[in-house]
Image (cartoon, rainbow, N blue to C red; front, side):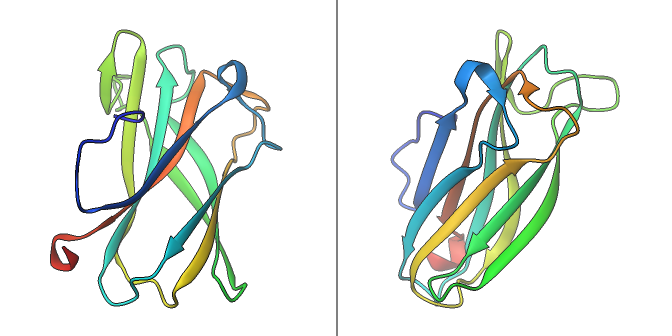
Length: 146
């Protein structure tokens, strides 16, 4: 899921970054710059995350910072659930690797056109955070905006 995207016309942007040695350091903020021209149609924003089965938590906290073309900054704190209460991993798995794509913003309209900077940071109490392999974002037009 994370490394392969099907030929889907709704996808505006998708990129995932492999984390060195499958460990996410707090100082290792992942940056994405996306040129957004469509301010009319709604978009869904997703967080992509790949973890190994040895990840010791059922969730992960992240900071997600958006900087608009005019420089306006917005920072969100997110909690992504990676396993259910019984410890069963969510998402798509193959062997000991689990891919998650979780909706962050639904039907979001970008307020201005231009280059947006998105930044993902891990916000857990363990640094570096082991068993996190990749992290990324996906932006797609909703069915209304196709």
